[in-house]
Image (cartoon, rainbow, N blue to C red):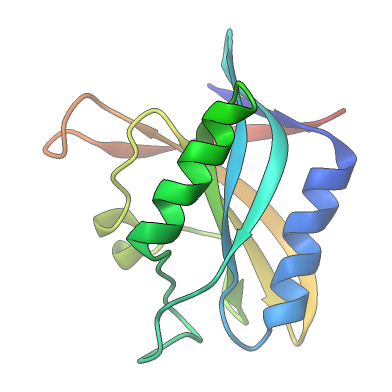
Length: 145
């Protein structure tokens, strides 16, 4: 099982962002360094949710924003280690849409359930595999510290 490590400030910021955007999904990128068993996340970058058709249950980060985030990460000596988003009034479990739209193999996907405006459960899933055809989400442990 892989492990996603982050400090308490990043963890709290993920959850707070979900509360701020409720009843819509929030989204953003997690910047860090590869670790022996997963990622060590050091910086959270909030992103705008460009989905206007169903922002309550879908998210999308604009490609131009993603390029900017990746460039900023490199300037800090970091990489995109994952992404996060919220599930307003739904469990912190990936959906078929989340899976279909997940393409960053080797990265973590963090989901926070926001129930009636309050952050509840936060889970992480590692996108394992070597190609689009054999990709799969594997539950991973979040370690704060």
